[in-house]
Length: 351
Image (tube, rainbow, N blue to C red):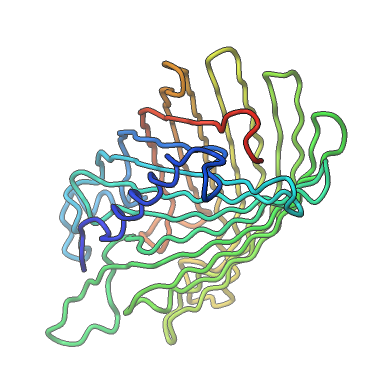
């Protein structure tokens, strides 16, 4: 298993930087309507989203557990580059296309580093209607080392739990009145685990509905609700079913006073596992409550350059006693700060 940066990452960033640098409406093609580059350094308080029981096992070097990370805390570098292109007004639906590449590089535990590729398209079939389509791909996500029940004599008992993930969404946004928008969306996700943990493969489907409005030119708030259903492949002969149903409520607010931008997102979800096997004592009858709070503060430094600070807090609680089961209760906090460069196309360019 290769722990270094993905070989294609530098090439992808160079290619996108070259495209972003192309002036909008340049001869031979259409440049980006917007371009953005971000770089930040941060701290993660719970690298593996580990429960208190797992943290205790890590500290005690419990022989029944195996960890390859040097610490449950680590610092990281976050980098992202994004370009958005819009076709001329003569194109039906005024389509727009955006591509984003993100990478998080952990400094002391590179095995946990991740990268993601996002492709988005926006259509405007009517003056007050738009359709947002998005796909996201994570080629490799390391969760932890886990006990392999199929390990043969002489083989390692613990193997890396690694999966790749693909997400897709479609959202219809409809203007209702001045400053008020209604959105309805569908989403799907696939997790494909590498052997020997193929039984943890998951498929997700969900629906969302939200409403957003402006209280003033500089203040906007909204909320959305959603439902998700997850199906787990499961390992034959092992009583561990990760299938579940989940309900979500997520209010948010955004403020844009002079030279400062503030956004606060709060998401609360209620998850109920659907395992029907009483022997599955990690999921049968289990209900989880999960909360996540995100705060982003951006302040203009000079021209297109801004400083950005993000705070993220996550807490998950379970109705069952903590025993170190799959995706057990945990808490995590992240903080990062850095710079963002944002470029808008000049007035009169194709949009």
